[in-house]
Image 1 (cartoon, helix red, strand yellow):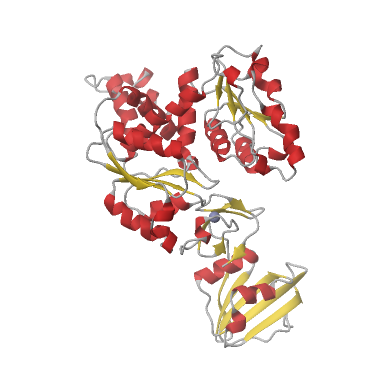
Image 2 (spheres, each protein chain N blue to C red):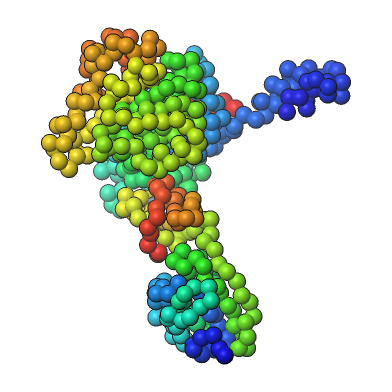
Length: 147
Length: 336
Ligand SMILES: [Zn+2]
């Protein structure tokens, strides 16, 4: 029996084990609503690892490193499946990188990165709770907005 | 390391003609941090070794008469006014034979027309060998250092950092006590918003000082500073009255409590006098106690203290000269 009732794709990327309720956030940060290919979203599916999980399948798309980093920031435990010819060609976990460029907006309105045309830069200083430190204003943040 | 190099049993493996003292001196020389072309942006990226080196060179600078920076140009870019810091940098550069260009009022420059800091720095670096920048936004000095090939020194970026102030504070402590390691330092006033006290607490942590934080409840030292100190196993304690800790302290570092920090002015009225240092507090203090203040003071330190022998804030301000001379000479490679 198939684990979930979301139909299989021929070629593309499956983002699996998204914590329940975060699928739409993943769609939003990847701007998949503006993507003109087929995107399937499954929510509150049963999972062995999580009580409930979400899943996002994107046809004919490979995610860039930057896109994977974005996903890691909102849902660090997801599994990425690369599908080719209806089969899983590659499967891996993603991690929050130690250094992030142009991924997060500095929450400090008086930070130079908010006031000059420069890319933001952040370091991961703590995993739990996730704390990012701004390269410019040197402040640490637990809440942040993605660019 | 020493044992390996020829103390004790290994001595006989060591070539006779090599003088151990000489070798040891050579080793420590090689380990000295290089400051050539280095940006001085944040105390957080200075190691204990870096700090010791800067303070040692500052001591040399007190007696230096050589025009070490002859032919060099310093650009002082003050995007917000800070007369004392600017004069201190300019005086240091002049005393070392260098020249100073710059501005103290961004309103008359192209920044008002919307030029980015990035572009401005790229232009100005062509006119100078070293840049000192003061800017109202946090991270501005870091960005300037990324735009410039020449070394950039942060003279204050918003509420973030002012590393030369911290270094002159450390130099002052060392000069007045003969050492920094192991001292008991009381830091009083606005500990929540004061960037000076944040950087100072961090730096004193590197020297294993015991810290007393004295502030009103609403202006306590932020958690991230305290967490950092806990991680380094630095002893510290929090208090609401200077009188509780002053008898134990080697240094009392007083800072201003600003009225604007209190949403309720009656709250300010209640606490403001609790942080005034006057001679009644000094009856049982240690003989070596020195009272510091980054200045300007308003009423935190009563003028009766000035003649007490404990006052040290004017010396502290003057120490800005040797410390800034040292930093300029080091980043320009004139002292190696
Ligand atoms: Zn920032």
